[in-house]
Structures are given as structure tokens and as C-alpha cells.
Length: 354
Image 1: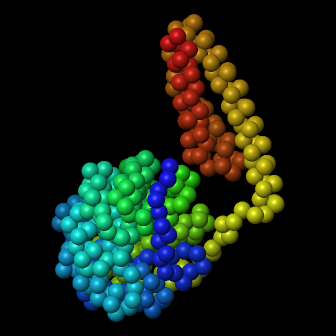
Image 2: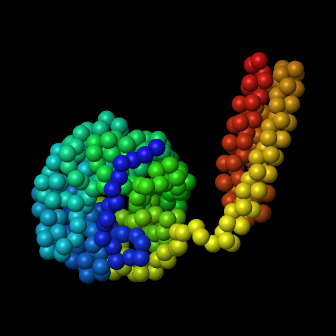
Image 3: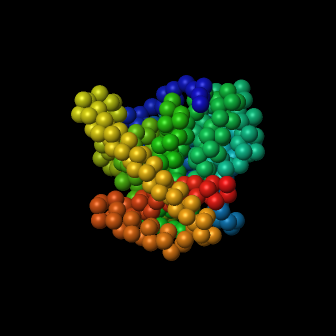
């Protein structure tokens, strides 16, 4: 799969990553300019602020819309920073470009709707805009790639992705689960695509932002988009996940940027060991499936159902506990055995239905 891309070439004082920062919402002209000047003073080159902010439920602050765009334009004029905002309709695209917005991003809810994405793509045709596409609300890699392909198909070559985590019914540590394997797979399939991490929306809490920023850098992300407000406790939207420019500067100053090259003999040796173990794993899985097929033959002859729920629960609990004792996350082990069980059931179904 190929995208027709050109480098984003976004400015940065960092060793590798670029930082996009600013408040969740453009609340007042004073708040926008105060925050922008503080961020510029800390070396930030790209300012973000939400102008159109429809909330999950009506009644809250939903942005000023077009009247706030001159505030962003003034930030660009007075500080020299690039400016960025979210767009969700063709009219948003038209107005943002009219006021000189440098970077447009597509929100998670919009990404989830191919009709809406196509309308944005059509509105972007013939422009030289820089566009970042957030992952859809639910963990659907194909939907994310589809949105990127639609935007790229409209001729947008300065294109990137934003990882902001995925919604889940059960609320755990994070507001949105990172599910790092999904952006990693996106990078594997589209290696030329820059990926930006949004730790603010993943965490939902300012105390988790620093660790998420470091995780993103450890995984080779290209940049960060962080919500920063001059007075976060009194922000009109998403107050709990915003940090001051001073705190953001401290977080960024402590980031460790890893070497992304693959040149050491030691690394090659270790990977060779992993390859050999992976081969052994595949052989063991094949032997396990052979036994599962024998079980399928027995169940067919005995008129038994394929799935024995008590046995399945026993496997998950026992292997999860075993993995934990050996330093492997219980949920990871359970996920692995869920997939193994799914394949076992599929193979037994083939035998029973012959």
C-alpha cells in the first residue's frame, strides 16, 4: 500500500520530534494570545486550538467558530508560530484556509464516518494544506487507513496521522486506551507516514501525560500534540488533561530520544534468537492444532458440542496466572489464548461439518 507523500517539514527545537501545543479550545482572544506567547517563549513553534468544539452532549462550550480564527491568525502574526485547528465540515476547511491556518486535523468522530471524510477530501482538492488524521473512536485500523487514503486521493501530500487512543466501555487507567499495537501496525503498513501522539486525549489526566510522551518517543513516533493552557484548572473544556506551558516545557526537556537505526551486531544476534524461538512457537502451535483436530474427531463421533466453556475458562485462568508468574501481563496471555482457542474452534468446526 502506497501513499503519495511529501515531508511535513514542521519546525522543531527537539532532537527528532516536533511539538504541537495549545489549549483544547480557543476561549477568548486574551487566553489564546497569553498561552501562545508563553509557549513561544518555551521554544514551541506550532500552536493548536479548537475553534469548532461540538461536545458529546449539548450544553457545554462548543467553540466560537469563525470569530476565533482571527485570534489564531494574530498568534501567527505576532509570534511567528504555525497555527493548527480541527475541521469537520467543508465550510470549516474553507474558513480555516481563508484565515491562514497552516495545519488542519480531522477529529476521531469524523474519521469514523467515510461520508464526512470524503466531503473534507473534496473540499481540500486543489489546496496545499497540511492535514493530520486522528484515529477513529473505535479500534478500527482499516477505517483509519481508509480516511488517510481518501485525503491523500484528493491530492493532499503533506499528510500525517494522530494517535489519540480508542474508546472502550470499561474505563480503566486512561480515558482512551492506547492500544499501541494499532499505530505500530499502521506504521508497518505505511512506513512513510508520520505519526503524532496525542497524550492528552489518551490520558484524560495531566499526571499521565509525561509517561505517555516518553512511550511515544520510545516507539518512534514523529511528534506530539499536547493540550496546553495558561490556566488549565479554569479551562472551558477538558480542564483535567491540559498542562501549563511551563509544565509542558519541563516534560519535553526530560524526554529521551532513542536511536532508531538498526546497525549493531548485538541487535542482529538478539533478533536471530527471536526468529529461532518464533519458529519453535509455530511448530508447537501446529502440534497443538493437530491434537485439537483429533479432539474434533472425537467430539464428532460422540455427538458433543465443540465449545466446552468450563474447559475454556480453566485454560484462560491457568495460563493467565502462569504468565503472570513469569513476568508476562495476564491480559496479554489471555488475549493470545483467546486467538488460539478461536483457531482451534474453527478447525474443529471444519471437521464436524464435513
